[in-house]
Amino acid sequence: MTEAPLPDPRLLAFSANLRRLCEQQGSISRICRKIGINRQQFNKYLAGRHMPSTANIRAIASHFGLDPEVMFSPEEEFRALIDGDFFETFNRMRRLPQVAAFLSTAMAVPDSVRQSLVGVYDRYHYSSIYPRRILRASMCIYAGADMLQHVYVERFPHQDDRSRTAYRFRYHGFVLPIEGRIFTLDFETEQRNEMTFGIYSQIQRNTKSVLLGITSGIAANMYRQPFSTRQALHYRRPGLLSRQDLARTSALDFTDLSIPAEVRDYLGTEPEMIKPG
Image (cartoon, rainbow, N blue to C red; front, top):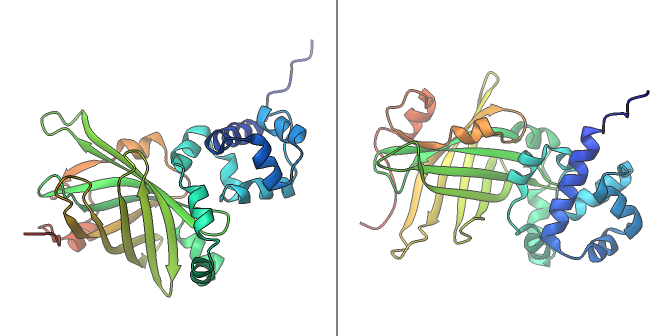
């Protein structure tokens, strides 16, 4: 008896990820009309019965603002990337003439520059919540359809029991390399009440890459304190976020030796934050 062939893992990943994207945007018929794909054929993609052509894969990915290869990511990693519903809002915003003019400049960067930034990073800065502790978040920069995007996750352990999580935040946003600097804009997509901004320069030594810069925002609490602090992104590896990356997120003592020495040197032994006195 001939065994049935194993399902194509790329086809399974594509169909699962496509279903998740469609769940966020509602009407399948509307999506098909916008992409220009027959509804019956699109249903086969959703069900994992047929792999789209290369042209249709590009069209589908472009509609959702993603790089085609991201559509084949493992489900868990893909979910970490696209959770949040700001993509369609941003797509509408960037069609405005003033925004389009700026983005045309921001996106006119060599592919080599984009590729030098993609991957998984540890994101370090002094916590605005826990005194004298450095927050280590997990961050991924990945290629969208026409610009770089990113996601990062912060986890604050409970003060009395560090094995428990007191707060957890997830941010999604965009990365704009412009004239030797890297600008970031992101949105907190779980509480949905915060945006932060960053600007960095890229420091390369041998095969390791470090982005040094500052981040700023305003606390989403009753006091609404503005803050700005030094921040460092330490490159770890290519790919997308994994469970192992998320397990590393925490608030660390500033003397913790798991923090790279050049990061500790840049952040300093005392937090330098700009906020009301």
